[in-house]
Image 1 (tube, rainbow, N blue to C red):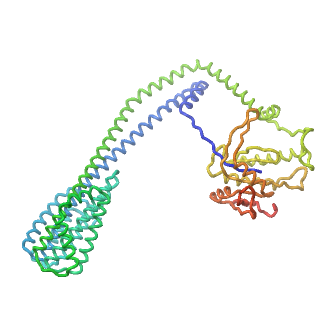
Image 2: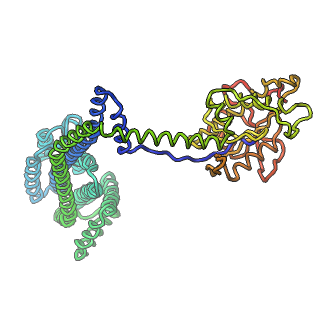
Length: 598
């Protein structure tokens, strides 16, 4: 017998207007105390939306305040980052000139060292909010600790330190400062919009400048000494590659920076050729003539190149500050709008509440006048009741319908002109058999989310998933019901044939259907579509006391889990290439392949 099809139903909602109408009708029928309660409910209907509106305004204001606070905090963080970048730039110059002095011991180089140290100290003193803390180490914890660490290390003019030692020490200190700066940049990246891309481009460019600064220091030492040591050569090559990588990252995240770089170096071909030639010499020529002036020239040209490209840093800084200013302005605008809206709500709501209260009071005074309307509605209700009875009489014979309304049992009747359906049973015995079996079936249906479509003779059609949708649960509902029905049939005794057993065939299929009410004289809720026919095919091509399921039904049960199925040993009909037997469900003792069933 065809069992399963799936369908879809639509949900309905009750509007606030219907709610108010219902409350008004109930209001006319209640006692005075109940009317007061219902007046209160009517007031709540208005008060709750207003309260929600005020709450939403408050939430918007809080979010706007938070956005403004975050934008302001980010602005302060970026300002500190820019000040830290200034320190890094000045320390890079101090490092390079110190390395050149230790390689050449040139008086002019020492004079420059002293000037660069003063510049570094001024940059440190200009930082308003130091970005470090105790977790960053003693040297980076505070601005004073950073300055003291630098001052204590600075070498005298008679120092015997090597240039590579100074390069490594300064690089370590500068790396710490870059760590603080880059950390603040990342913490400022969640403000929104395209700001984070400019912050990342800024960070990449500053790192590229650091690599150029190390090249400047190592190149100056190389010419001042006349040769390089392996560690310096290796480091020079590494920072050369890193500089190229960081510059590419900067350009990838800021196309305007790439365009600006091209314009800045467009007429500086001689400078780029000089720098590339020196880089090649440092990497390929082990020894050159020691010349402090050549080292100073390299230092000066690299400084010119770094200062020239610093226009990119300035442009990124201005862009970031402009975006931050725009975000602060946007947050301020949102805050102003929210405050304005809240003020309007605060002004409008009280008069509206007063008007609403007066309207409700007026309704109370007009209840007496509404008695006639209530009587009319009662009349209409009676008319609708008669329509319902008429519809019921169309579905069932009037005598049968009236007996069911009175709660009486409708006994089977003998009709002389009926068709013979079994040579071993009288008509009354057939009716008694089917009534007893279908009564048990109907009782079991109440325990599952299923709908009995129709009963025609010995065919019993059940569907899950309509009229009320239940997602994929219809597969579990109908499969479990099938096993329950088999168990009912197994336990069922035919009153007039106690030694015989009913042979129930069940077929399951899953798919879409079209459902609706058909007919006026005897309206029926009917299903249409291939799914109904496929379910019938599953039943007709099945075997007694077995649950025959299609491939789509098997797929759904596998997805749900908990069911045991086995592939049928032969090909089924109607182009359903592969079908299965449903055998059991986890946690359910009854099995459809039990020996006593076969």
